[in-house]
Length: 234
Image (cartoon, rainbow, N blue to C red; front, side):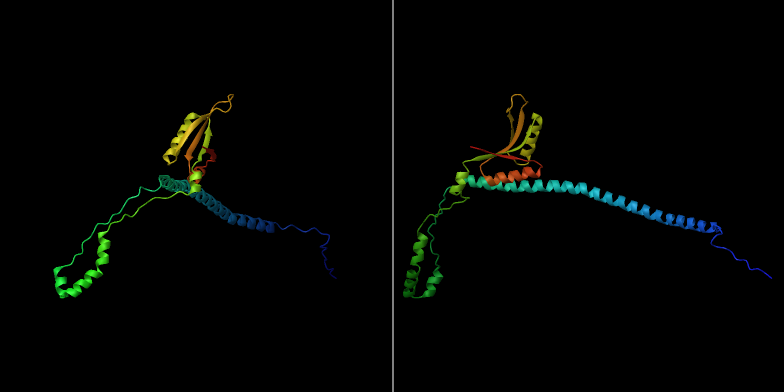
């Protein structure tokens, strides 16, 4: 009689399967090899994106820096031109005189009328126009822009803009020359407020007798990364 062999799976140790581990490691290496090109591609795309952002950024920043200065300069020059017309006032009155103009009546027209009565009627009709053409009068002609009383009171005060305050005299002179090239009336002066310290050199723009023109000049200085200070002088 044969006795059946019963294997106790609960107590007997299982034999490890080495081939399964080898397959798992092979799959892991295969996945790593597939991820490597993706990571490299993402790195290349990121580098290209950073380069594109930085390259046009410098040119764009330069254009954005230069454009406000040019726009502010144009507005200031327009306001300054208007201010000159205001201060100039109206031009002297000129007279426009009309000279008598004789009526040009051809002989053929007179002959075509044929009758003296018609001639007399026409002469009476044109008598009023003849008197206008024979007379002379003067018409006042005035040009320019006029200041109101309030504007004239404001013009009594003058303003200056302090563009910068520097320790070095050569830097102050160079900045004043740069502002003059841009159309501003710039100069620099020495300030000895504290005798214990060295002198300061103030770069001033102006003076201005019109607030609107001063505001345009202030916008121009702000566009150049400056912080001007307003001062009122008599």
